[in-house]
Length: 206
Picture 1 (cartoon, rainbow, N blue to C red):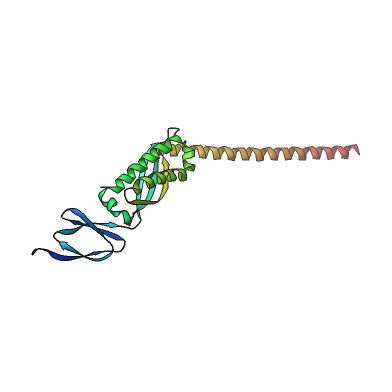
Picture 2: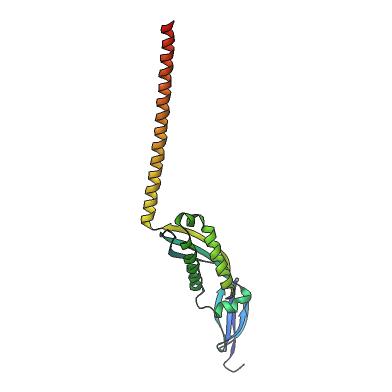
């Protein structure tokens, strides 16, 4: 070591990995614990968490029956320690990259479905996102643990219309049930009156 060089101790926390460069060139990855680097020739230029992280993405798209919906997708991911080099040097903004792929999958899947079908196919959409992300992000040192469709909301006007339709449907059902009940009452009353007349007729005949 030169006269100006010194040994510098650095600490890497549990569930982290440190990235060391030597004069601007990648030198090594540091595991959790205490390490010594030769400063100023070497330095820890980055630290990456190995914990599972979550990215929430909201994407607007249109269904097959021309209803605009907002789809919320939660993506859980983590850095693969054995591929930490790729995770640090190959992607500038992994969260933005994941978001772009989520947009791509959602906007190519949901437009093939009508609104009612989309509500029932949340798991299918989540599985499509997971399949696409796993293959792509693994090459960059990231493992996609899980994807979930957390929300699927139509436009506010469509929501109001759906509520009106449901309310109208329920009112019609209630009216139908009431009419049926009234009909049964009338039939029973007519039957009772006929029975009374019949009995009355028997009495007169005697």
